[in-house]
Amino acid sequence: MEIRTVLLSLICIGFLLIAGCTSTTPAAAPATPVPATTAEPAPAVTATSEPVTTAAAELTQETPAAETTVTLPVVVTTKTTSPVKIFSPLQSYSPEKTSNPGLDMSVITGLDTSTAKYAWSASQGYFVTWNPPHETANIVGSKITTNGGKVYWTFDSAPADLAVPVTITVVVSEASGKELGRSTATLAWKDAKTVTVSEIV
Image (cartoon, rainbow, N blue to C red; front, side, top):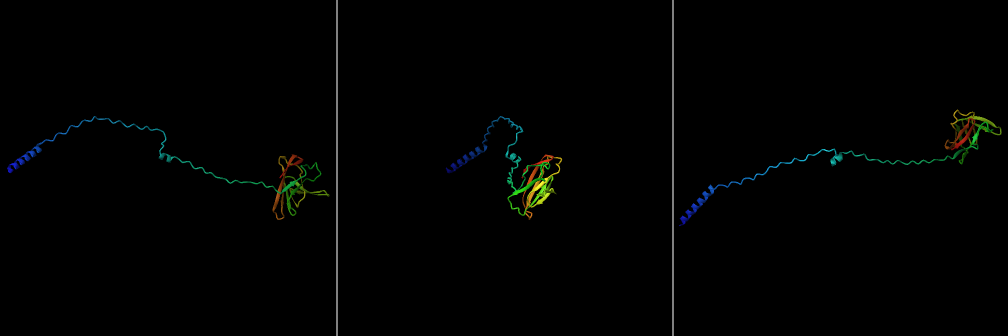
């Protein structure tokens, strides 16, 4: 009985193996055709003349030079007043209209000039000394140095150009040569025979 059962089992197994080897594999389902599509061309980039505003372009732009501010020093000038000044009692002078030997001038100063020297100079004409009561006038020249007192300036003839003034300058110095002060008188030609004192500084 057992042998029969075994044989039947072997026979069934054999049929199963034969059936498995002879079975056909089902064909694969046909692929569904996909309609072809046409790719649209990419839009063309139109070149323009607009400037490129990228960071790289900005770096290539020329950077203007920085302005430099220079502060200049303020120079304050102070006009000094000389302690020496020429004085003349006459406002005009003409050799033909006065008995004086010349236009008399002296120096006004508050300094101690007991040992000072007075150096006078004239751009035109000449100086004379006059010692009353002898009333003797001596021609000195366009320069004269005194110890103080009055000096006299005169002229023989006017220059061709009456617009050129006469400049008379006095420099007061100590005996050592140190200058104490100076003053200048400007004489203008009123006509060929008369001068006027126009300015004293």
